[in-house]
Amino acid sequence: MELWLEQSEHHWDVHSYTMLLPLSTATIRRMQAAIKPYPFERLYAAWFGRDIKANAAAVVQRSEVLEEAR
Image 1 (cartoon, rainbow, N blue to C red):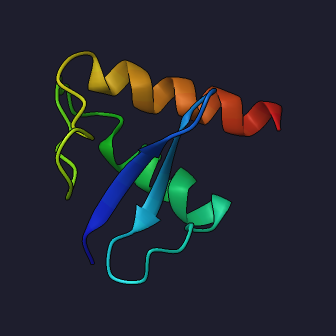
Image 2 (image 1 turned 120 degrees about the vertical axis):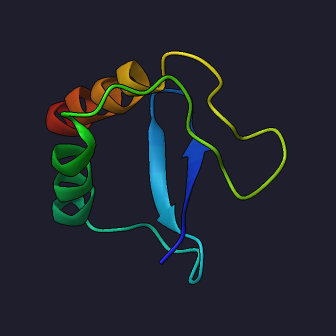
């Protein structure tokens, strides 16, 4: 499955590229946990203008915190 990111006013949402539907909170948390040990600066999206070109790990972690705050 390919994933894409969508930025709202407060956070980034991870969506399934193939279905274009939001993923469950549990799925997003598992994905965040799986990539947390790896340092990375960039995330590439499926569409132009949606890439995160710097501080991508921080964006992912910030999204995790905001998800907890909902």
